[in-house]
Amino acid sequence: MKPHQPDYILIFIVFILVAFGLTILSSASVVLSQNIFGQNYYFLKHQLIYGLSLGLLFFFVCQKIHYKHWRKFAFPLILLSLFFLGLVFIPEIGYSYGKAKRWITLGSFSIQPFEFIKITYILYLSALLCKRGEVNKVLKESLIPLLIITSVIGLMVLFQPNMSALIIIAVIAFTLYFLAGAKISYLVGTASLVLVGLFALIKAVPYRMDRLTIFLHPELDPQGIGYQINQALLAIGSGGLFGLGLGAHGVQKWGYLPEPIGDSIFAITAEELGLIGAGILVILFVLLACRGLKIAKNAPNKFGCLVAGGITCWLFFQAFINITAISGLSPLTGMPLPFISYGGTALVVALAGAGILVNISKYTK
Image (tube, rainbow, N blue to C red):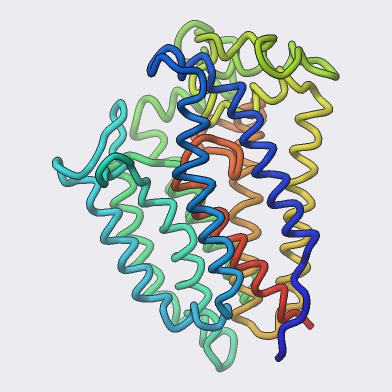
């Protein structure tokens, strides 16, 4: 098919999200930046240089590459991503923050390899599931390579540890099998087994169990394990309808709310911009999901459908999990908010995924 005009509404939504994220980050990071580096906008500058500039480059390159070419390189790309994921365990290269080993350092900047796994896993699984033949046969043939790759990823992220990574991988796999035509009974049975496994992993580690306990009883230990969620709810509640005002008016970023530029940034958004500002952000992610699913529905072939659906559901469900967790509607996971939370690698990969989605939109029926 000859390409036509891309989905300009999708492009507009993506760039509004990026601008929204940089605006919130400029306010949420100012205190932390001053305390650590002695300057107000260190994190914002870092996000602009290593996140936005590279992210825009990846976006424009990916939206130019015909999406069908990714099918040929899906397997080498997932292997390369696994190689980088393994580098976090090498002492001279891997970088730890707290007890987590999730970064590798290259010169003066760091990379979080799991972010690349998200997009390469979607490409690899889409390539597996779009093979010709009867649907059930294709699904069965894909199980063994899928289990091998997923098991390797699962072991690596468990040793980091990174429980939220397992959740997003499970969401991607479930979504792509659903779009590929798997029976609902099969998906429900598989999802039940995955939930049992996740609960066993939560039960095995005290701090994970603490998060589940505090979700069910947020009033317990407000100065201990319940501190983050209670401060987040305080921030969301104090924002009211219009917010306290962007900038110096926010309170929680002054050392009260943990991770104000990471997984807690939605609480800062609600505090400073109020229900209206937070609601606009939620609406933007819903619109992103609608445009992405429309592209998947009208994709010219199964591979395009699976890739578009996988990228859309990854971005939307990651945002959904982050927002519900920090609002006390689901247990805390430590999952960043796409396009909004601080993290250069995350922004680069999200924009690359958006670029692939835009390219698919050029070939929709």
